[in-house]
Length: 278
Length: 250
Image (cartoon, rainbow over all chains, first blue to last red; front, side, top):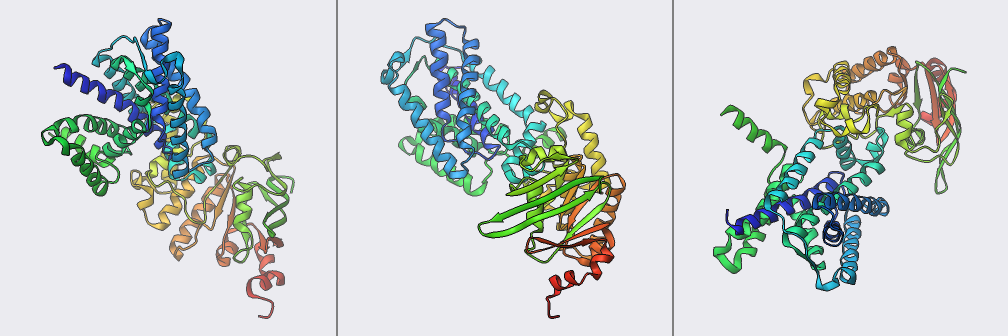
């Protein structure tokens, strides 16, 4: 495999984790446009741990995930009162807050960025990405996931059938933030250089795009979306300057034709049935 | 009635200056079917919403088996033993019948097991769901999205969902609204079977005929005030009730 494709593959694994972080939160009916910030927290914290304190990378990732998870849960508290577009706006605000914090955080380079991380292989990236994807797919068959769906579908009714909707929503935010932090840690150690601009609004939107394009109702949708988002613009290189426009057109078409994204429950059923029959 | 399962004393709920419910006093004895009737806007649904914690009572007490649940959040009230259905059916749009019966079950298992696939971790929950599905005659519809089913069946799914929570008291908000005679009779039979399993039922209903033949005891509300109570035949003969329903001059 050429280093070019290896790096694209690593990029898509990192994006997959970002997309899953949005997907988990979205499963409870909350749209976060600030997950780039959780990614940034994971990137900066894990880099600091490995570079300045010589903590082994895997441990550093776990610590960053836990820290980001706690921050995510704290952020979710005020967000509980907000719904829909208002919640989305609040998460944008949070994202900008975190980005400007790192911009002014001179101890880790400020706007000049931070370096010195050890480079990691594409295999290590996908060990995490694949592992977390499988964990999410198992979670999708659990009781907790049904509770998340209930909160997503009708929060009031969920409370009135005995579900603690507050815990569900805060938990989803915490876990989503933790997954985004892993994504950030992997990004930092794959690119070996980070700067605040890596974790801005664009990044948060990229995560959401991967989920919406690939399929927002099933976990593997994020996989499809991430691969498409990374590889498609590369394959469209022959049309040079027009590739992003072509990509945008494709996105609009998918949204018009399939609002739930490319992959959904029934498509998965069809695909797996065919494979079994063949 | 000392064996009251549910006991309300002086429950009051106001919206702005409007008394949706004033000084409501009632008791639901264990193992009975009790009805709440009254004209539109009498405060029946407000009563249910206040009992289940969807609204906070402004005054008064709601007690379940002697435990004061008045200011509890609704999920705790459900876990204490009060489950309900809704006047305008509220099923979960993305779920099948089967999933509805799993999600509403009591939280008896540990947190870790709730994170694992139900198929591996929770055979008891699956058995319970099968059992309730069979009781309500929904087994054939197991994997259908609940919201795609006919109206009458959706009502049954909603009742089944409430029953899987293993409540002591089941609140039914107009369980036969919009149903034809046969469907309503089926629901009536189901309620009697549920009562025979030991469940206590409190229901709101418009159809006087229906409640008269089903309920052991009735409360009549009008403009948020309890205007009459008694056994169905007593209520039927009560002139105050006739006035409320038909108007004074008729």
